Image (cartoon, rainbow, N blue to C red; front, side):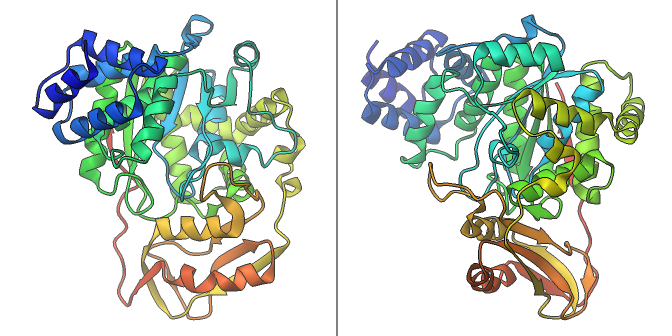
Length: 435
């Protein structure tokens, strides 16, 4: 085979065979195919697309490009969960320990934040001493002993995806459903869970800006999972405004703790409890959604869910006391309240804008490798649909100094739209894609 022949084939609308896809990924991973040829091929895929079989073959080839954990051979059922990312998305921090406390093992590798969407790794590292980088042996041991492990993404998993993603990032080929789906699913298949729940977000704070794009991506990933023998379900959820009230690492961890205590904001709590219940039905821990929801409620009320989060934190060398007493988590030196500029109903909140504002306070990275200040961020005092008076609290700013807190205020206010009339609130969970 020749790379240039395959580039021309896809450029002209052709379909790759399984053998051709396997060859391309193997040769690119080994460095035989140079970046300039792969960049050309990615652009051809961007314009011409891939059918379901090609997308599945691409995913499997990328999954096989490096280490595979096969966690379902150690413990089964074992669930993995993935969110396509958003602002204030602390769902994994609550759902993973909640499901584990209900008796379903969770083997989760997660990433750092880049851009306006936060990363679960950064939130977990708000805890003193917490170790995110685990060897394969430690990953498996913690999973067996505690039924839950929350580790950082291994560079040995799906290395072809790492190379391809870096190339897509600088060649204008990110927004391709087959390439996004194969990127996400290759890492999931390399972990080897028996069940996978996907949270595919759309809206101002998400990567997919409309529900049609999100549905196409969800359907593609569910099809890939099923073809690979992994029971896969996708929830399509709204990210038109930040999820919950907290934006920022330690702040979001505190909110996740509140959710596990049954005291979290209504929107994010409802999403967490629903996704946990969905997992319990998927894994046959509960026969119906109603039975699963009852089990979730019991696990919250008994305190078992919060104890499970403290347990995995301790297992990974973190200070579990900070989970049981969240007031011990790091706190920003400056807390400043931004008042509402007018009376009325909040009509819309630009989630991406608030995410970027939080980054400027130090809560995120503008480029890979930037340090993160786990203390900083924002806490929303009102959400879309709420009616407030001029001068009422709008956002609590958690900053490193007074100057940063002052400088960010105009950018925050620009993220809000107002109405004199009541606003209809759309449901957070818009659809569930099942096999």
